[in-house]
Image (tube, rainbow, N blue to C red):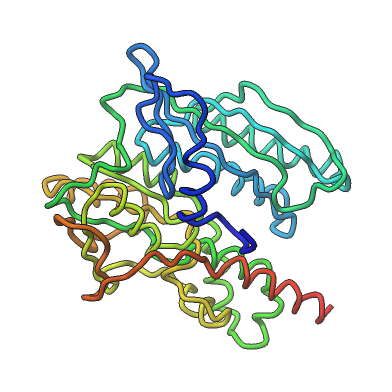
Length: 342
């Protein structure tokens, strides 16, 4: 496990999945590699839950960094179609964070939680030696709702259509361009850099998921985080036991993405893309889902079809899971370049 980033399926299946403690009848959906959330039945209600790191990059500015950190936590529950409702959070803060900086972070969390209807119910906060940015803790989100509203990650069925919002490399473009804007000025025009940094505002799939689920019928949703669009499509196909046939020409690509990915020499289709929602929709629901997303100003398109079988075909060729996202190594490489320049 020397590689940076999320562990691959082989490591998960070998070291994590066999050891899950006691079996419980109330767990409807437990952990699987590439699946965003778990589901627990409590009486006549469904509880969706997911845990993620608290990811805070001070170079974004603490308010903007906190906005992104909050939405990363919310996104895995939102793709269940159930509204996030409760948050438990652990903040293991670096010793150098000031009270004023923390206040910016927490005020942003409070504002975003209030707007989304999420209550912070418990947690832990402290400064500790050895804790460093950007991973400064973890959070567990719950969504309590009607079982009828649940969109399972394994729900894709033959005949469904594949929809994609926003397109590839949203997070990779937004974060790398803001962090290394100074270096990009050597090779890219100001308008290309501005378009790339604007992608930061797209880095949440929460509104995408809740909007699509309400318009339905949506059969499965997944956010394209590590390993990007191609990795996410592969994980959706594996979860549902189906085959996905997708055309990249049909998928929207946002301004600045191509220029940024070329500059950083990363493949946009396998790069982390928090903010991009992958979903399968019953044929009769495609128009209503696309219309609802359009009403919210969220770019989206029908990009493929679900069929019997397994795996993913992209532009006529079978693909495998990328396994490793180029973002983390690129981030480390360019941090070194930035330090050399300064």
